[in-house]
Image 1: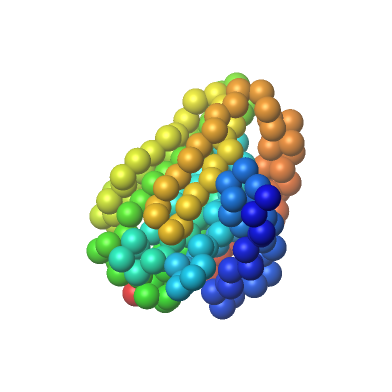
Image 2: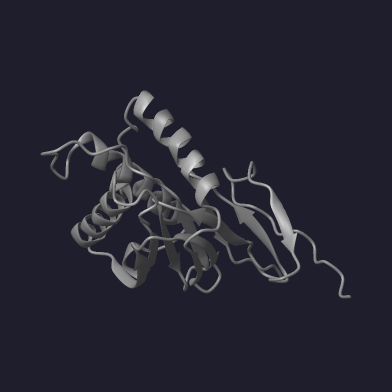
Length: 210
């Protein structure tokens, strides 16, 4: 059995995330949950951790700048959208805030906006079409990325399934495993708690892209 390599370093502001060695991937991993995002950098002699999450109705956007050796992923859900809401509604602002947090961190650490490569997944129908939260999230992320002019290399959205996602920020590779039953109960409860939290909190602050 080969020795486990030394744990890679983290970028400033991400030290609170715990890394775990995953023998399957032969790499360190960092797991993010609803409302989280993580950015990693390629450093000499180190492989950045894989970023993982499990999605139901939520969406994850994976972004990297391969030339700068930077990549990251977020995990977000919009609050329930009210009939008649437009793209600037309170609900959409949550999604925009989640996107801008990730993008601004990448730019802050040296990524170039015109080199960003985007991959998207999630937005599953976890409730049999009763709430359409997954569809709402997928619709938002399409609209946002189009309006901001980002290049989407691949996407896997919708369907009556949950997803386990593994993202390699070093090369921008996104792996998705789908399941129609596994993780459903846990995800529904996790998303319910998160939805209750964001509905009760004030809107995210203004964040501008630079």
